[in-house]
Length: 374
Ligand SMILES: *Cc1c(COP(=O)(O)O)cnc(C)c1O
Image (cartoon, rainbow, N blue to C red; front, top):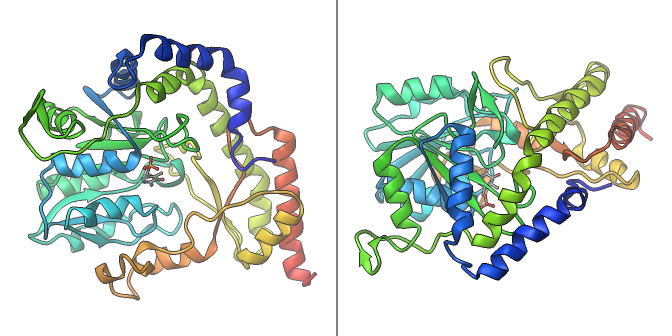
């Protein structure tokens, strides 16, 4: 069983993807070819944003977003420590300070009730993460940001395709950033990403930053970087788009089915639990993650049964050496607790119900084994 089955997806889309790749090889515009604009137009329309700017990765999308907002050394950006390192990395790279605010224990997303207390005169932005495919509480976060005139950047690397109060992840705040890393809900065959905004000036800044700060050829108006997404990767995403709605539907069905099948285990086994999905949003289950007791033992039992698992993430960022300076060791207790308990199960649109049943049965056995000590 695959943790994420990308081969089955390729098998069903092979004709279209191969043709799309060959079109690029034939026209030869490997950088900024026509597929780049085509993808940006298609994605902007999809999320309802005025602008989409494709970039070389999800990490670059976050970095370019902060650069477009003119983040300066010494500035502070409020974010969650319970995320992939890229979220805080881009803040630190620019010499700014990630200010870690704890998560809601049941969704693992930034807790908006803790945000206001973390705002200082140096705060320049709030960067929530839509973790595991469920959008953070953007309405609350946007309301706080508006009171303090701060921009909000949604890290939507895991949530492309998710909705929140009828609007699309990526188009819920000043700038939304996503990733097309192969294992994300919408993936390419290498690195890629995009940012979305309705703000003309920010979109223009992002377009210039991704080509070394050029406003015209060899006119370097600002400091930028080489952050373009390859034409080939844009062509791959374009070829995947026609199937994407079906894939999102499958993700929602499989997520709901996991929830239904695993709910009885949560009643039977202390320490085992499911994520909460709030009623005003959905999750695209970028990861299907549960809380487990004795995680190392459960993972070993599942591995022995042929079920791959993963941990997103084993340590909150403020406990990582690179970021320890940014937080007191005993802050963000919910992030610390979640990091000790989370485990992600196989999830992709091509996961079969039969394989899902095997995962659930193996997990039930592993948890039963814990209580009997076998
Ligand atoms: C994957 C991911 C990123 C980075 O995306 P890349 O395309 O791998 O650079 C950033 N934030 C989160 C939450 C992610 O999951």
